[in-house]
Amino acid sequence: MQKVISSDLESVGYRSSVQKLHIKFYRGGIYEYTGVPQEIHAGLMNASSKENYFHENIENKYPGRKLL
Image (cartoon, rainbow, N blue to C red):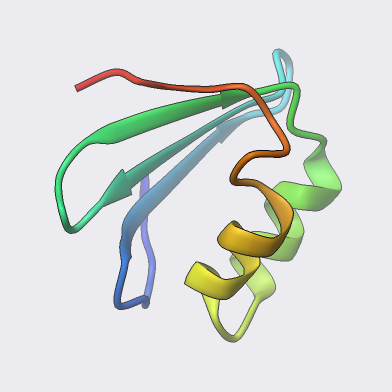
C-alpha cells in the first residue's frame, strides 16, 4: 500500500498479476476491486484528484468488496 495525497483515499495498493486494486479510505475500511487493468491503476496514481478519478473510473465499474 502506498500513501497518496487525497482528501478521501489514504493509500492504494495494486497487484498487476491478478488485477486487484486495494484502497484504504480515511473514513474507514479497506476495499478490494477486481479486474482493474494496469492503466486504470496508473491513471488513479497520476490523477490530480484521486477521489474524482476513483468515482468516475473505478467505483461501480469494477466488482468491489470491503475487506476490513
